[in-house]
Length: 496
Ligand code: AMP
Ligand code: MG
Image 1 (cartoon, rainbow, N blue to C red):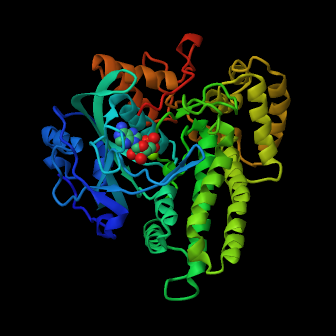
Image 2 (image 1 turned 90 degrees about the vertical axis):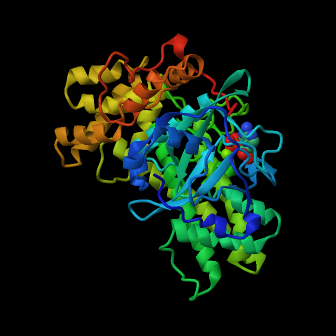
Image 3 (image 1 turned 45 degrees about the horizontal axis):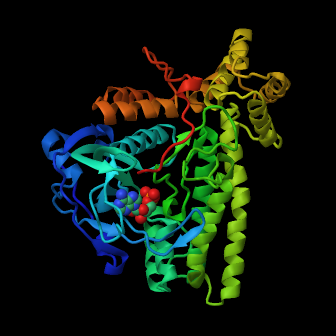
């Protein structure tokens, strides 16, 4: 059933990892399986057997050819450096080559203790596993780079967090699990050789087209180019988060992927009412990872990445710092450009003009003043082009409409310069601004039904609509609707 493993990471020097087997669970049961992704990865679905799949995705059986290992990494958590974190409850099974020829990591999360577990139990509760499943698959459907969810199994065991909960294991697929924290682990130990190996691995897997082949030119250029490439991908990624109202919640450097994928869905959530200061995570007391801070935090994390590369960039540390600093400072411009491209798309613009950023900001300001729902406000821009009734549907989202009323003529004037007819622009808008995102109250309802009543129907129904985010959903439950006062989820718990 499994495609063959390539074991690239397992063949790197032993100090990059700890070999470790998963700890079997009492009673594995497959509760979610992503057939489409499995196909993309080259699984033989004709040979699919749910019982066998449950065993393998629970870690009770190791698939043929896999060599499970826990990756070593460090990280800045809420700004404080922790020199040793590592996979404390996750195991990399190996990499597979997907149908498009790309290497993808397969990782079990919640598969038991590892040498990096410290005091932890190595397990994951069902709720956070399903949250990661839902949100990562929604992100993918929204066109945002992300790790994917291949399978979820319940373990038949309880895990103890705030209260006892059913245990589960998630199978995660990633372009790789190289993180800023992976580099930091070795940089902190002055192991430049390992940092260089990791940098070469990152280039081979994620940035094969970088200038400066190893054989030609100074090596420093190559690693500076890697830094620049990672800066570009992170700028792009965070701009896309901002464009969907996504709040990651724990942007620690160990949760910052070198490939530019969104990784580690903990207390993440999408905003309902637009407010740039929104924070969801219960452990983020000071709002370090609030919506509006995300670009600045990404830049801060990238500066930590740059520090690990300094010895590779130039033997002269002053010069290395100067060159890396210039690249990190360049993040601001890269991000601005990405953000304007994202927001231009959300306003239905295919061309680019000088004032487009200000125009987008104008709408956001109007949304903030009118306490409008972020997702619906953008979705209903297309309605405005249908006529006055459509405009009223948009306005109904705003409790204060003054700023919106002033903004709409500016937008129409700008649309006129697109040289496209309104039906074409409306089509673009509906293909860019989703009708449904995994709203937090729906996610919580789905998680509670699964964890408390063993009822997976709400999870499945929600998954079905959020993986087609640009279609208007039909059915009894209105997944597009923001939460009522009583349904609002103000805090998401890390308790993962
Ligand atoms: P996270 O908050 O999931 O990004 O994890 C941060 C660090 O804590 C990583 O090193 C994890 O492996 C570790 N960790 C989180 N939960 C557990 C657990 N239940 N058992 C062992 N290690 C854990
Ligand atoms: Mg993490």
